[in-house]
Image (cartoon, rainbow, N blue to C red):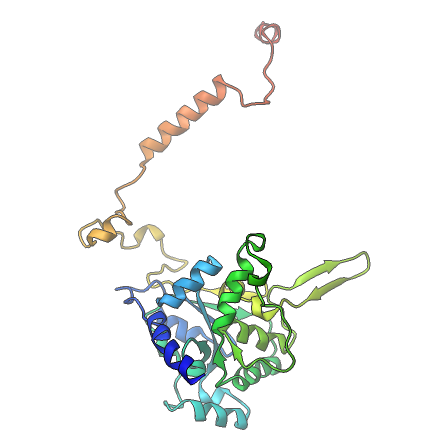
Length: 312
């Protein structure tokens, strides 16, 4: 096992290498920091190579999820605070998150770690205060648990068309093992924490004549984007450049191409480029002319006798 660790360390380092952050992020970190509440889920658009793998597997922008704990004094249970202090050496007034990371396992970090990233808040709707503390209790109980690399590949195999693969290569994601898992990934750990208080994420719903039944989804199938899709979580966004309800979005600081790099020039254009009103009106006129001259397939077209009768 020690040899495997030495072999895997360079791979983990390579996978964790990150691209540089955007010059101007898509989300306003200061406003997000102010808005966050304990038990909120922070979705992250990752910049590492492992994030690219997860993005390809899940087909989603959101490649990582972290659970917001709040500041140290927001954790009511003194024993839980003691455990968190053992895992975090920073200031007690820091805003803290708990997350599972490749190469680090389940850890506590400062929210500032994501100050330059594209973020989104997912807030569990009507989660009770007591249940919220239990969600945090579960997450803290997982501190120190290793990151489950195999689960990522099992998830990829599960999402891959199974009939193409030989049976022995199919996903082992649903093999049940006695006892508690000793490894996890970010979204699975958070999904388990909410399942701990029976809070739904994307349940299976069965409806009969007499009742409705809900079934919890296997937490190992949970991906960061599931919290975004879930109807049981409110989505909160704070864009870096925003307009208030009393402002006009036409007044956003749209600019020309002067400050774009060569690569950006291929992806973005200025406000004066693209279709203008004249082009749109001409297209509408052509569409009206076509619709009046040639009926759509299956559309009723009167006969010449009927046309003559209507015209008489």
